[in-house]
Length: 415
Image 1 (spheres, one colour):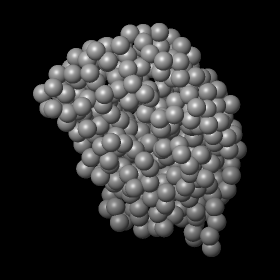
Image 2 (cartoon, one colour):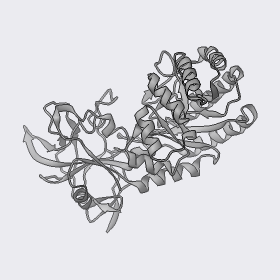
Image 3 (cartoon, one colour):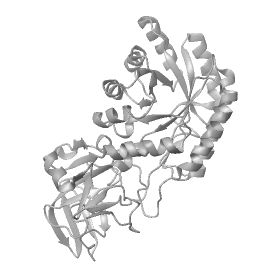
Image 4 (cartoon, one colour):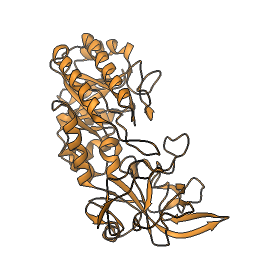
């Protein structure tokens, strides 16, 4: 019998994975079989069908002329990057290490951009040698890139990452507005553009990223409109035509109670209006939307196994072989101010009734911070059962302190 995970008032929507015979199904495989195939727990599993479906949904909602870039910081697993390279137009990297993964995956260097506030001289030389687009975030980078271009006999392709004088309202992490380590303050950009011209760098455009993890459609629309207007004004000072305009992303996914998925339709309509205006004011510019979490977050799960079921003064603890060293975000220690539970379930007992008593899922680490679920109503679990943490496709393994306390690293699979 096939079914979907029932909606629950204590969870964000997590109905993307089907259930068969009481087991969660990921990538067409029942969870128990998948765990046996992986050969060990804990592990992350990413569903390639869901990755493809998310890109398809975006294509249907956004104007055809808008390019999609994957910000691979969200999930740099090589197999995931390789799959997305075939679905999106470009890849955004944040280090030379990520650049190598993108190139190995077959990404077109002309459609790779490199952002980050602390690029080393060596990384800048590598970027010029690879022929990718570098998002300038400092005046310091200009002479380094000029030297690299002269030494290599190659153009240094650059865009300016702008720190606007506004922020993306209601975003999980604000990346612009006020003092920021990211980009160049908008008021200083005309001076930087003059420096780019004097240094002979190959100017191509602007990169603006106002914030991340936003579930308010109107806030994203407002930020995109303001970003376009700012870029159009700054273009008057540019040493050449704007060919590339990255309007950022910020599209969020639901994690916590009461949160709902983003409505893409109004965003697509707004981008169509911006595209039409850009055709007049920036006629050579290709518009880009840069997304990370939104592409991969809901396509992944974290799976760990129950090692012990303990009751301490009336509270149930499910002690597992996974924890914050693998999934820092689910533990609440990756940007949360007040800790909230990610959606979770006993993945091999999806048809079992929910325990009357709530349970806490903890890991094997000697710290009270090692908490994956705090007093959640879960299906009854015993030793050997599999705990699943949903919404785990972004900022999971690579964003966690896997060397903490010497436990083994987590496995990742694409299915």
